[in-house]
Image (cartoon, rainbow, N blue to C red; front, side, top):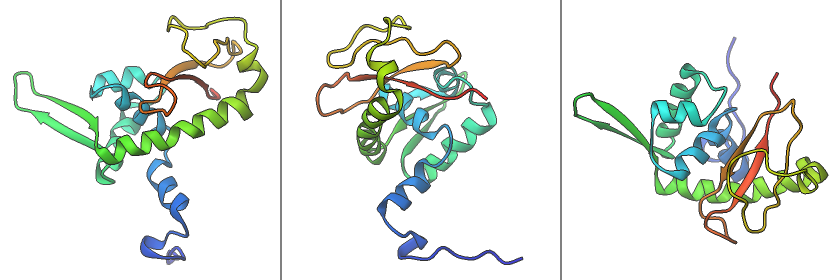
Length: 164
């Protein structure tokens, strides 16, 4: 059976959002971008910072992000050899573009449970402009720091995702 091509302009994209979603479309890619926005990481560090991702999926997403020019992979010829991943300038700008999406999620998805929580569920320090909140027990949480946010360089936001 033949595959039908995508309509639209260059690369078959309909608009800029369509093209951007093609880059960040994996389940874990945004969290990988967040982790690399903090600092360059080795594979094992990324695996620990993105709980729930399998090694196979992490390796696949890193390869895709590298192919898209978002992530830089640097291999060190040392003993023992190791590889370090970091964001390219395009990756840094993409991370900055995702900060408003995180703000939208806090306001529209987390809503009152985020704003009126009973205190911090993590050991991370409280952040200016972001209230501390305890998420429901049945959902894991991770504290995200979006580099380059407009209001404050260390802006932290709490995200949650379904586990099942």
